[in-house]
Image 1: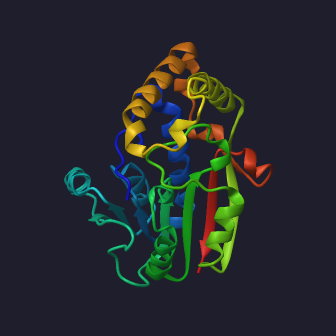
Image 2: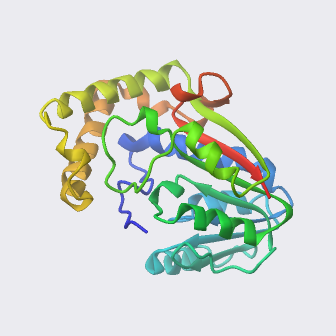
Length: 260
Protein backbone atom coordinates (compact mmCIF):
# COMPACT_ATOMS: atom_id res chain seq x y z
CA UNK A 1 0.00 0.00 0.00
CA UNK A 2 1.16 3.51 -0.72
CA UNK A 3 2.80 5.20 2.24
CA UNK A 4 0.56 7.92 3.62
CA UNK A 5 1.84 10.90 5.56
CA UNK A 6 0.15 13.78 7.31
CA UNK A 7 -1.23 15.27 4.08
CA UNK A 8 -3.28 12.12 3.55
CA UNK A 9 -4.17 11.33 7.13
CA UNK A 10 -6.48 13.98 8.58
CA UNK A 11 -4.48 16.52 10.56
CA UNK A 12 -6.33 18.80 12.91
CA UNK A 13 -4.87 22.27 12.41
CA UNK A 14 -7.41 25.01 11.62
CA UNK A 15 -6.39 25.29 7.97
CA UNK A 16 -7.36 21.65 7.44
CA UNK A 17 -10.79 22.00 9.04
CA UNK A 18 -12.89 21.41 5.92
CA UNK A 19 -11.07 18.19 5.05
CA UNK A 20 -11.36 16.89 8.62
CA UNK A 21 -15.10 17.60 8.80
CA UNK A 22 -15.62 16.05 5.35
CA UNK A 23 -13.85 12.89 6.53
CA UNK A 24 -15.59 12.79 9.90
CA UNK A 25 -19.01 13.01 8.26
CA UNK A 26 -18.60 9.36 7.21
CA UNK A 27 -18.06 8.21 10.79
CA UNK A 28 -21.08 10.14 12.04
CA UNK A 29 -23.12 8.60 9.22
CA UNK A 30 -21.85 5.13 10.17
CA UNK A 31 -22.88 5.52 13.81
CA UNK A 32 -26.42 4.24 13.20
CA UNK A 33 -25.16 1.25 11.20
CA UNK A 34 -22.85 0.07 14.01
CA UNK A 35 -25.19 0.60 16.96
CA UNK A 36 -24.96 -2.45 19.24
CA UNK A 37 -22.92 -4.30 16.60
CA UNK A 38 -19.33 -5.34 15.96
CA UNK A 39 -17.36 -3.20 13.52
CA UNK A 40 -13.95 -3.35 11.83
CA UNK A 41 -12.60 0.01 10.63
CA UNK A 42 -10.03 -0.63 7.89
CA UNK A 43 -7.38 2.02 7.29
CA UNK A 44 -8.10 3.62 10.65
CA UNK A 45 -4.99 5.80 10.90
CA UNK A 46 -4.77 7.53 14.27
CA UNK A 47 -8.11 5.96 15.15
CA UNK A 48 -10.16 9.13 15.66
CA UNK A 49 -13.04 7.59 13.68
CA UNK A 50 -12.75 4.14 15.24
CA UNK A 51 -12.94 5.75 18.67
CA UNK A 52 -16.17 7.45 17.61
CA UNK A 53 -17.64 4.17 16.37
CA UNK A 54 -16.72 2.45 19.64
CA UNK A 55 -19.16 4.76 21.43
CA UNK A 56 -22.00 3.01 19.60
CA UNK A 57 -20.69 -0.49 18.81
CA UNK A 58 -20.36 -3.46 21.13
CA UNK A 59 -16.83 -3.86 19.76
CA UNK A 60 -14.73 -1.74 17.38
CA UNK A 61 -11.47 -2.92 15.78
CA UNK A 62 -9.25 -0.47 13.91
CA UNK A 63 -6.85 -1.87 11.31
CA UNK A 64 -3.85 0.06 9.97
CA UNK A 65 -0.63 -0.63 8.03
CA UNK A 66 1.54 1.50 10.34
CA UNK A 67 2.86 -0.51 13.27
CA UNK A 68 3.96 2.67 15.03
CA UNK A 69 0.51 4.22 14.69
CA UNK A 70 -1.22 1.08 15.95
CA UNK A 71 1.07 0.92 18.99
CA UNK A 72 0.30 4.54 19.84
CA UNK A 73 -3.42 4.00 19.33
CA UNK A 74 -3.30 1.13 21.83
CA UNK A 75 -1.49 3.27 24.40
CA UNK A 76 -3.82 6.24 23.95
CA UNK A 77 -6.98 4.12 24.26
CA UNK A 78 -5.99 1.37 26.68
CA UNK A 79 -8.90 2.17 29.02
CA UNK A 80 -11.55 1.73 26.31
CA UNK A 81 -12.62 -1.88 26.79
CA UNK A 82 -14.53 -2.41 23.52
CA UNK A 83 -11.79 -0.89 21.32
CA UNK A 84 -8.91 -2.80 19.71
CA UNK A 85 -6.25 -1.95 17.13
CA UNK A 86 -4.64 -4.44 14.73
CA UNK A 87 -1.55 -3.98 12.57
CA UNK A 88 -1.50 -5.44 9.06
CA UNK A 89 -1.01 -4.48 5.43
CA UNK A 90 -4.19 -4.86 3.43
CA UNK A 91 -5.04 -7.10 1.68
CA UNK A 92 -5.24 -9.56 3.32
CA UNK A 93 -7.03 -8.42 6.47
CA UNK A 94 -5.65 -10.12 9.59
CA UNK A 95 -9.08 -10.80 11.09
CA UNK A 96 -11.15 -14.03 11.29
CA UNK A 97 -13.90 -15.11 8.89
CA UNK A 98 -17.53 -14.14 9.54
CA UNK A 99 -16.70 -11.98 12.55
CA UNK A 100 -18.13 -8.49 12.00
CA UNK A 101 -21.60 -7.08 11.54
CA UNK A 102 -20.19 -3.97 9.85
CA UNK A 103 -16.93 -3.16 8.07
CA UNK A 104 -15.99 0.45 7.32
CA UNK A 105 -13.28 1.74 4.98
CA UNK A 106 -13.35 5.51 4.61
CA UNK A 107 -11.05 7.28 2.13
CA UNK A 108 -8.92 4.14 1.99
CA UNK A 109 -9.57 2.00 -1.09
CA UNK A 110 -7.94 4.58 -3.40
CA UNK A 111 -4.58 3.77 -1.78
CA UNK A 112 -4.62 0.08 -2.71
CA UNK A 113 -3.14 -1.81 -5.65
CA UNK A 114 -5.29 -4.92 -5.15
CA UNK A 115 -8.70 -3.37 -4.66
CA UNK A 116 -10.72 -6.40 -5.74
CA UNK A 117 -8.67 -8.54 -3.36
CA UNK A 118 -9.55 -6.10 -0.62
CA UNK A 119 -13.27 -6.34 -1.38
CA UNK A 120 -13.06 -10.14 -1.23
CA UNK A 121 -11.37 -9.89 2.17
CA UNK A 122 -14.08 -7.57 3.45
CA UNK A 123 -16.72 -10.06 2.34
CA UNK A 124 -14.80 -12.84 4.12
CA UNK A 125 -14.72 -11.12 7.52
CA UNK A 126 -18.35 -9.97 7.36
CA UNK A 127 -21.03 -12.04 9.04
CA UNK A 128 -23.88 -13.25 6.79
CA UNK A 129 -26.18 -10.28 6.29
CA UNK A 130 -23.42 -7.85 7.32
CA UNK A 131 -22.84 -4.39 5.86
CA UNK A 132 -19.80 -2.82 4.22
CA UNK A 133 -19.62 0.98 4.26
CA UNK A 134 -17.01 2.46 1.93
CA UNK A 135 -16.15 5.99 0.83
CA UNK A 136 -13.64 7.39 -1.62
CA UNK A 137 -13.04 10.55 -3.62
CA UNK A 138 -14.96 11.13 -6.85
CA UNK A 139 -12.37 11.01 -9.64
CA UNK A 140 -14.37 13.49 -11.74
CA UNK A 141 -13.81 16.18 -9.11
CA UNK A 142 -10.02 15.75 -8.99
CA UNK A 143 -8.14 18.44 -10.89
CA UNK A 144 -4.63 17.34 -10.01
CA UNK A 145 -2.97 14.03 -9.29
CA UNK A 146 -2.70 12.98 -5.67
CA UNK A 147 0.60 11.07 -5.34
CA UNK A 148 -0.80 8.98 -2.49
CA UNK A 149 -3.69 7.64 -4.55
CA UNK A 150 -3.11 4.51 -6.61
CA UNK A 151 -6.51 4.74 -8.30
CA UNK A 152 -9.47 7.12 -8.11
CA UNK A 153 -12.92 5.85 -9.07
CA UNK A 154 -15.84 7.31 -10.95
CA UNK A 155 -19.30 6.45 -9.63
CA UNK A 156 -20.04 4.15 -12.56
CA UNK A 157 -16.75 2.27 -12.25
CA UNK A 158 -16.96 1.78 -8.51
CA UNK A 159 -20.57 0.59 -8.60
CA UNK A 160 -19.72 -1.92 -11.31
CA UNK A 161 -16.68 -3.25 -9.45
CA UNK A 162 -18.51 -3.66 -6.15
CA UNK A 163 -21.30 -5.61 -7.86
CA UNK A 164 -18.78 -8.28 -8.89
CA UNK A 165 -18.29 -9.09 -5.18
CA UNK A 166 -21.44 -7.95 -3.36
CA UNK A 167 -25.03 -8.82 -4.20
CA UNK A 168 -26.60 -5.65 -2.79
CA UNK A 169 -24.94 -2.33 -3.63
CA UNK A 170 -26.33 1.16 -3.01
CA UNK A 171 -24.40 4.21 -4.24
CA UNK A 172 -24.85 7.80 -3.04
CA UNK A 173 -22.76 10.96 -3.19
CA UNK A 174 -21.45 13.38 -0.56
CA UNK A 175 -22.32 16.99 -1.34
CA UNK A 176 -21.69 20.22 0.53
CA UNK A 177 -23.83 23.26 1.17
CA UNK A 178 -23.15 26.72 -0.24
CA UNK A 179 -20.28 27.62 2.06
CA UNK A 180 -18.56 24.24 1.57
CA UNK A 181 -18.81 24.56 -2.20
CA UNK A 182 -17.55 28.15 -2.05
CA UNK A 183 -14.45 26.84 -0.27
CA UNK A 184 -13.89 24.18 -2.92
CA UNK A 185 -14.45 26.69 -5.71
CA UNK A 186 -11.61 28.77 -4.28
CA UNK A 187 -9.58 25.59 -3.83
CA UNK A 188 -10.03 24.73 -7.51
CA UNK A 189 -9.06 28.24 -8.64
CA UNK A 190 -5.86 27.91 -6.63
CA UNK A 191 -5.07 24.50 -8.15
CA UNK A 192 -5.76 25.67 -11.70
CA UNK A 193 -3.44 28.62 -11.18
CA UNK A 194 -0.63 26.19 -10.28
CA UNK A 195 -1.42 23.69 -13.05
CA UNK A 196 -1.16 26.35 -15.76
CA UNK A 197 2.61 26.06 -15.35
CA UNK A 198 2.51 22.33 -16.07
CA UNK A 199 1.73 22.78 -19.76
CA UNK A 200 2.63 19.19 -20.67
CA UNK A 201 0.71 17.63 -17.80
CA UNK A 202 3.87 16.02 -16.42
CA UNK A 203 2.43 15.70 -12.91
CA UNK A 204 0.13 12.98 -14.26
CA UNK A 205 2.85 10.80 -15.76
CA UNK A 206 6.02 11.10 -13.66
CA UNK A 207 6.59 8.67 -10.73
CA UNK A 208 4.46 9.63 -7.73
CA UNK A 209 7.58 9.96 -5.56
CA UNK A 210 8.68 12.91 -7.73
CA UNK A 211 5.68 15.01 -6.84
CA UNK A 212 5.17 14.04 -3.18
CA UNK A 213 7.21 16.91 -1.70
CA UNK A 214 5.76 19.63 -3.95
CA UNK A 215 2.28 18.21 -3.38
CA UNK A 216 2.69 18.41 0.40
CA UNK A 217 4.16 21.92 0.25
CA UNK A 218 1.53 23.29 -2.11
CA UNK A 219 -1.35 21.64 -0.24
CA UNK A 220 -0.22 23.23 3.02
CA UNK A 221 0.27 26.60 1.35
CA UNK A 222 -3.12 26.47 -0.36
CA UNK A 223 -5.03 25.59 2.81
CA UNK A 224 -3.25 28.32 4.78
CA UNK A 225 -4.03 30.94 2.13
CA UNK A 226 -7.67 29.88 1.81
CA UNK A 227 -8.11 30.13 5.57
CA UNK A 228 -6.57 33.61 5.60
CA UNK A 229 -8.82 34.68 2.74
CA UNK A 230 -11.99 33.44 4.46
CA UNK A 231 -11.85 32.87 8.23
CA UNK A 232 -15.36 31.38 8.08
CA UNK A 233 -13.93 28.13 6.69
CA UNK A 234 -12.84 27.24 10.23
CA UNK A 235 -16.52 27.22 11.24
CA UNK A 236 -17.52 24.62 8.64
CA UNK A 237 -18.77 21.47 10.33
CA UNK A 238 -19.79 17.97 9.29
CA UNK A 239 -23.39 19.20 9.32
CA UNK A 240 -22.54 21.29 6.27
CA UNK A 241 -22.27 18.07 4.23
CA UNK A 242 -25.11 15.79 3.15
CA UNK A 243 -25.78 12.68 1.07
CA UNK A 244 -27.66 12.77 -2.21
CA UNK A 245 -28.60 10.55 -5.15
CA UNK A 246 -28.85 13.51 -7.53
CA UNK A 247 -26.12 14.69 -9.93
CA UNK A 248 -23.69 12.15 -8.51
CA UNK A 249 -20.81 13.09 -10.81
CA UNK A 250 -20.89 16.58 -9.29
CA UNK A 251 -20.58 15.36 -5.68
CA UNK A 252 -17.31 15.29 -3.76
CA UNK A 253 -17.16 11.71 -2.51
CA UNK A 254 -18.58 8.31 -3.39
CA UNK A 255 -20.44 6.53 -0.56
CA UNK A 256 -21.30 2.85 -0.98
CA UNK A 257 -23.47 0.64 1.23
CA UNK A 258 -23.05 -3.00 0.27
CA UNK A 259 -24.01 -6.44 1.51
CA UNK A 260 -22.68 -9.91 0.56
